[in-house]
Length: 400
Image (cartoon, rainbow, N blue to C red; front, side, top):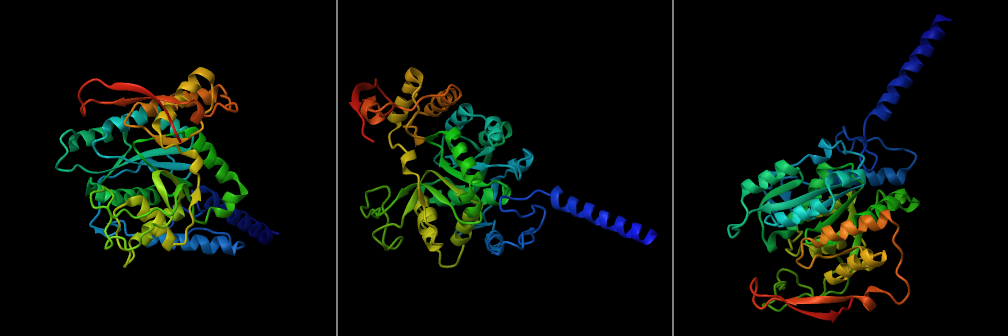
């Protein structure tokens, strides 16, 4: 009898120990225990497809050199950040918003924070980080001391040790993805966007939540994801006077592969790691146009097909102005979720504030015949001289 009691006590003790092991440790978005080394996460042996996919994902993670960005060696953070751990959001985040921002755009970053606070985003399962490069010698209006003060106040910056420049945008883009995969591994999705973009965080949060909860998401959680505005059959610009001129040495083809607009796109942890790892492979020629290189050239090598969400986007900031007007006057929903700020840093504040009111008070769909393209008349402002004189204002009909 005593032997049986000891045996029973041993079984219960083992069950308790297993329960502590199984449920006390957090997992990342792909089911791997966060305290383990890459490749040691717990996985279900009954699902061989998910197991092999997760193993492949861990190999991608471990193959990324944190001291490199594509062909740039010796990379390190001037300003590092562990905001995911500090906010206790290591494994519960629905998404991380990676805002690539010019180092001197402190007012635009302030507009983003005023439009929607980090606390509000965290309550939605989202977290925002601004990615900066180092101050260039030509910059006269911002200092490193000011950037460090901004970080102390808000705690939402990362900064790399490469200089801000058009030809360094690829490094900033990769830094953002690598930071999220290394420091916010529990986040299920990554949202990369530019700082001069206006967006609807409420709609996107609902979209990500639905994506995560759907059967399709459970199937694709271990697969690749790139979704946004898809450019197809874009010709390479060979005119040397053009800002986006590309030589044949840089890109020999005449047509770019399909790629996503860097205004805003959605990806996941596995895809971000795979893109970062692919950029570091020998023979992966660096390309300075970041959207084309990362979501086009690298994605094509990895056979990742982009998902088109083109209907979300407006190329005219004036349409977003008209959305704000119609939300105020008629409680109409906006037809668009992403667009440029048109050089108006306050537009993002006005847009998100009206959106929040609209969602709270149940705005209506636009009636037939009242589309933005049919009803939006904007003010076209032209300065007599750059930064001087009085604006000349006239009305104009807009096209999509």
